[in-house]
Amino acid sequence: MQIGEVIRKCLYQLALEEKNYDKAAYMIGKLQALADVFEMGEFHRVSLGLDLALAAQNADEAIATMDKMLSSLDSILAFRDSPLYENMTFAEREPIYLENIRQNLIRSFLDQQTYGFLKSSPRWEEFMKKWVRSEDML
Image (cartoon, rainbow, N blue to C red; front, side, top):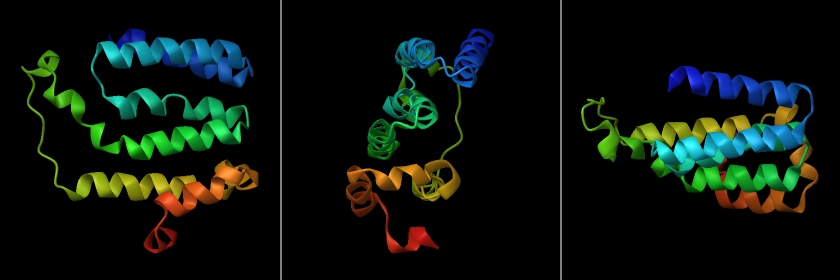
């Protein structure tokens, strides 16, 4: 499974580098299907589309994906409850774990170099009001 996933992700990255967004979207569909098959949770499924939205400079799609990522953050460890992984032992996570991920995502979303173009979207202010707290700006 890991080798196949690596190959698909490499093909996806290659399509992005070539600005072949149709092929990249096709690959995302395949990667999302794998996330579903392997019960990785909604967060893993939706986060796959962020790079494409950013590469295509599609502000509305990027913001929608970022919103879905933060909304589904509690599913990031959902795979641990799947019967597929019942033979595996996972380290326990402190409740602060998800909050740290949320803060790191918000901080990365505020990076001007990568996400600065999103400010021109009318959805940006709505996103900021919904998700960003004053302590996230530090």
